[in-house]
Amino acid sequence: MFRWGAEEEYIPGTLADSIRSVRSLQKHRSRAKETDPVLPVSEADFRAVLPLVSRQVAAMAELQWLTGMRPGEVLQMRWADIEKPAKAGVWIYRPHRQKTQHLGKDRVIPLGPRAQKVLSKFKKLDAKAAIFCPADADSEFRARKRATRKSPMTPSHLRRHESAMESPKQAHQPTYDTRAYARAIARACKKAGVPHWSLNQLRHSAGTRIRRASGLDAARALLGHSSPSTAEIYAELDLDQAARLVEKFG
Image (cartoon, rainbow, N blue to C red; front, side):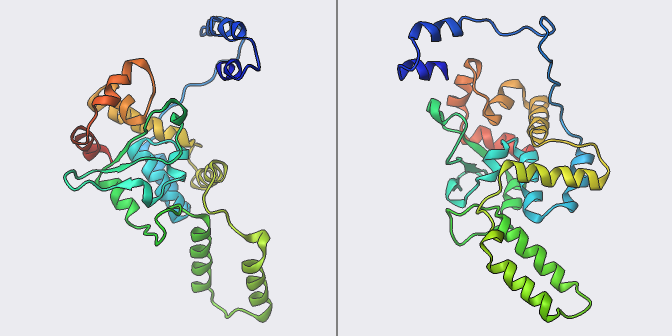
């Protein structure tokens, strides 16, 4: 941010240089509050939540668990951003908005057979529409409620239903946001009686599995970590290598 400020001449360049020279805080060497490390979520706690959320939220969580993608990456998934190479058994997802976009780095997320199976349940006529839509989840929820009603809807129920469907206040966003996604998971954790886990713990769980099986560099590359030590991994990781890795995990 300070470098950008210097480039735009909002602050002197010498100030940006001075700020970059400040050393990072060392662990347990200051009064600053120490943050807890992000731990992986157990598969049992993860699986316990899936039946208690919408089909859309369950699929997003499953994809994070399998691929280690970031919450924002799964929320914005579109079929237009997914390639299906003829030679490889792996699909390639390139988010149209990504964390490292300003650095000119192309984020590539390989999708293996399990992830493909999850996605195949969500076909869209519009390839540029979000695959996971809150309006779809709401429509499915309302349909289930109507199907399980033991008595016919009264005229007052019908009027309220029509009003809710027509009211702009009830209109749904075309995509989930991170807060709504996280709230749905938090409510389900409480209902399932399992310890609360966060969306980033799913990503950490995937990274842990990949690291144990294929090494740290492979985990960093597949998770999209940006650091000098992985610059060459990004350049050299081709579809064949990605296919071999995600065939085990995603």
